Amino acid sequence: IDPTYPKLGGQYHDYIAHALLAYRKGDREHALMGSQAKDLTDQQIADLGAYFASVPGHIADLHNATTE
Image 1 (cartoon, rainbow, N blue to C red):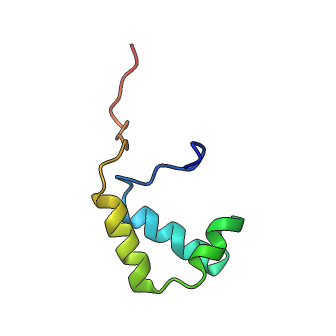
Image 2: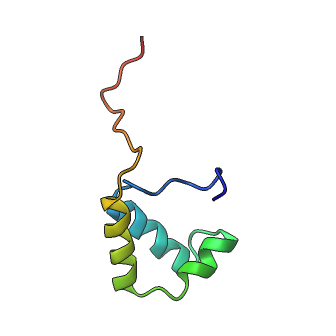
């Protein structure tokens, strides 16, 4: 897989769902994602969000992070 592609494992399910809905509606544009999302049902979008949220990932909450 192309290393420039985003890593979706561990991403928040609502972020995935929101992004896919935006691609499906055309509010968010990307040649590959728009064509992939255009035929997804609401249930498929919810399922994809749940799946990627369940996969271990490298998402980190940096809200309280400090730099030293």
